[in-house]
Length: 358
Ligand SMILES: Cc1cc2nc3c(=O)[nH]c(=O)nc-3n(C[C@H](O)[C@H](O)[C@H](O)COP(=O)(O)O)c2cc1C
Image (cartoon, rainbow, N blue to C red; front, side, top):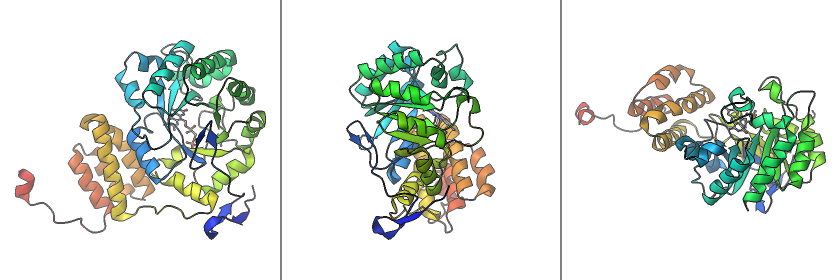
């Protein structure tokens, strides 16, 4: 794919195309065409806050099991927790039963969700197999009529905009995303995001952004391209090949919560965000770490935080510090090791032995 360079506002070069307006989800105008993907176990409230702090068109919660949230499941409820009132946040629901999906939509709307997303993309066997919550996530792409019944139940239940995230299809013989997207738009869905892989690919191979183009051709609502977008160039390629209205970034934001803002600036030709280094990076990571401890409680927080700390260390090129930080069992020790890893200079006087003992 050949990328041309054009001057954007502020004189930087834009990648590939003229700057495009950020998409609107019904009457909600997004501030950027670069959105944070939902990731179970990752896009919790602390991480969404850090990403939103740098700038993101939209942040999406982890998937929330519809029946579980309605039956008072503490984990499901914590996943649906909002707390980012000043930033466009979507809560993603997963499930197979139109009744529970409608009820859960009502519940998260009442809790303040500005947008509700329906998960028809998750490939995990525990989600797509019958049993538990039933065959949901990407399995619903094999049952388009049920998928539409779920969409109709959710759009009828709430006043906030409803969006849909799915894959190209179940496998290479069934790229039915354009058909489902057109029917979903007819049922009131305001935006669709397409991960450019089939369910059978899971995360293997490369995302096929060109295969998203038929979805764009099938609907007039905004279409967002997703999969393997990690920088301005890949975002520009994905937009050019798919014709999509925006991009959604998942794994590219791990350990790099500034990545979405950086991609948005590259696309628009504006000044990119300052990527924190050294002591600034330490401050960012330690604030994120402490937010995770507060959100989950110290015991669970310590364990949940390890994956984020590992990504930060990878991103900052500090693999040498990994073992000590990721095996430490006391938050104070973790913070001290992070300080040593990221700060060139000590932050201040080392505590005296007597102070530590007190
Ligand atoms: C650990 C992990 C958890 C994910 N959880 C969800 C989820 O809860 N809901 C969803 O729709 N997609 C989920 N996804 C898929 C992502 O939203 C995204 O579609 C996929 O990672 C491709 O985008 P990327 O290449 O930018 O990561 C998850 C992906 C990963 C890696």
